[in-house]
Length: 614
Image 1 (cartoon, rainbow, N blue to C red):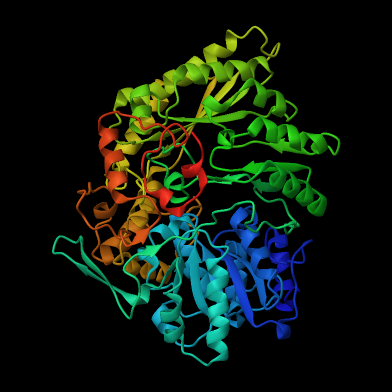
Image 2: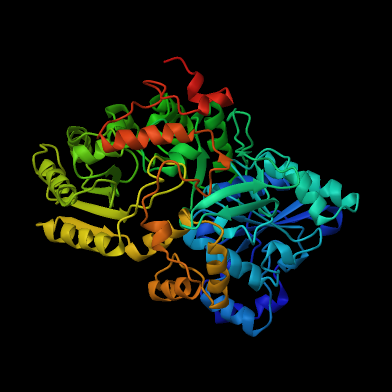
C-alpha cells in the first residue's frame, strides 16, 4: 500500500517503481492480527536487494508464520533520499508504507563491507536511534546476519543481535522468544540475555574487549552468562530446509531477473582466498527430485522463463548431468532456459556443454584467479592451463566467441611475473580460438579479463596476510594493462581504493565503531558505488578518529594474535587455517573434500560431504 506522501514524490525521482510496492506475490497482512512486525532491510538499491536469494527465502519463511508480518525495505537512491529528507518522510516498508519505527525488528543482511554506511544511514532515515544503548525499550530491535556478520565487531555498537550462520531456524527462534518476552513484559535487557543462549546468536552488548598497548586484542570477555564461543547455525538437511514456492516478482528490471534454485550449500574446493568456501562448510546437496519440483513450481508461480541453478560451484554437484537431463524434460517444452553459473574450468564436460548448448551464446565465464600455475597452487585453485584451453576449445567449437576470465591482483606471494601471466594466459585463449576448426565462420573472438584486488578475509587461510598497499595494487594493474598486446583482449579492473576500505572493515575491531559513527555524521552512504565513494574523505575520518587504517588492511598478523572474530565458531578450526596458510607459502595444494578429508573440523556437524562415501 503506497504511502500518499510518498506518491507525491514519485514524479521527481528516477525509477519510481523502486518505491511503490504492490508487486505480484508480495505479502500483505492485517497488522492488527499479527504479533510481530519485521522490517527486512537490504542496505542497497531495490534492484540489487530484489536479486538476493537470502532475502527471498527469509521473506517467505517469516510470512509463512501466521503471527509474523515481514516487509521489505531498501535504501532509497540519492534522488529519493533528498526528497524524503526535504519532505520529512521517514524510511518506510514497501508492503504497508509504514515507517520502520512501527516495527518490532529491523533486520539487515550484511553482504558487503562497503554497505555498512548504508545500514547506519537507513536507521537515521527511519528516525531510529543509532546506538543499541540508546534504544531502551523492547521494540525496534536491530538485528543483522549474512556473510559479513562473521566479523561483526565494526558494527557492534549499533546492532542488538547478530545471527551467525544460516538464518532460517535461528531467526524464528529469536522472534518467538521476543513474542514471549513481550507478552511477559520483560525488558530489552532481559530479552537480550535470553537470546544470547540460543545457538547462533551474538549479542555484542554482553561482551567486553581489552586491548594491548600495541593495539591488538588482549582478551574478549563474556558477561551475564553469555557463551564464550558463539557457534554458527546451519541447515543440515537441504531437502527438508524451507524453500519458497513464490518469489515477489518485481515491477522494474532488477540485476538478476529470473527464478533461482539453490542446488547445494558450501564448496568442496578449499580455495584459500574464498571466505564463502569456508563459512558454509560442509557441502550439503539437495536431491534432484527436490530441485526439479522447486524449479518447476517457481516458474509456474512467477512466470519466469529462466531458472538459475545457484551454488558456489555448480559443476561440483555430484549428478549435475542427470539434474540437467531431469530439468529439460519439462523446461524444453515450456521454453524455460536453465542457466548454470559458477562453472569451473575443469567441470565443463561435453555432457554439460550439450545440455546448456540451447542457451543463447552470450559468453562463458571462468575464474582461473591467477596467471601462473605456481600462484594457482598457492591459492589452492587446482586448475591447470591445459584444462582452460581444452574447455575454451570445446566452447569455441560449439559456437561461443566470447569468454570472460576472472583473476585477482595482490594475492599472497604474487610477483610481477604472476601478473604478466594473466595477460599471457588470455593471449593463449585468443590463440586457441583461431586453432579451432569448427569456430563460428566470419566471427572474431573477444576475451575479457577482469581483476579484483585481493582482500584478506576472516575464516580463510589468508586472514593473517597483509593486503598490498593501494600503490602496489595500482602499479600491478597498470603493469598488466601494458602487458596486453592485442585488441582482442579487453581489460577491466576493480578500484584498489574501495578494496582497501573493504579490507579495513573486513578485519576491523570495535575501535572502528567510532569511524562508522563519524562517517554517518558526514553523510557517507552507497560507498560501494563510484558516484559516492571518496578515499580522501575516508582517510580524513580515520585521521580525525586517530586510527591508522593500515593497521587493519596492510599489517601481517602473527598466528598467535587474538583476532576480532576468534570467539565465533564457523566449524573450521583455526589450527586447520594455520596449516593451510603454511602450505600456501610452500606452493602446496590440498585435495578437495571428495578426494580426501583435510580434517578442517566441519565433520562435527554430522552430515554433508564429510559423511559421503569417497
